[in-house]
Amino acid sequence: AKADVYSLGCTLYRLLTGGNVFGGDTLMQKLLAHREQPTPSLRAVRPEVSAELDAIFLRMMAKQPQDRPTMTELIAELEALDRG
Image 1 (spheres, rainbow, N blue to C red):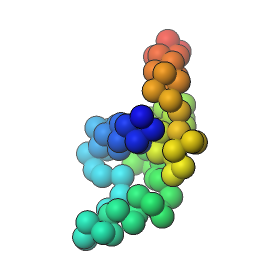
Image 2 (image 1 turned 60 degrees about the vertical axis):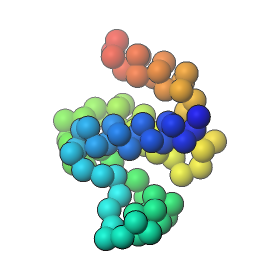
Image 3 (image 1 turned 90 degrees about the horizontal axis):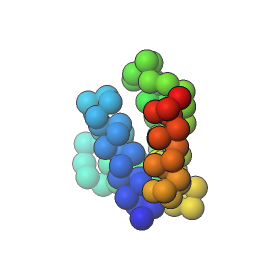
Image 4 (image 1 turned 45 degrees about the vertical axis):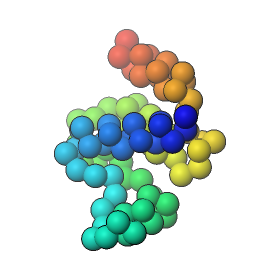
């Protein structure tokens, strides 16, 4: 389930920026980037993204699965942001 949250974070990044979270010339470089490089901020590419959504995104992309929200927590955070 935590991998799904991470994948959803990658999808969110793609939808909002049109690009991939991490780049590389080869598949191995891309895989290593996911493991080793810091996650870029959405706001670095799209400054109009709210700080709150960027914080949720960064939690979704946490390197350690235990640091990611559960899907239930994620839904609650996004709903609160929508109300907000």
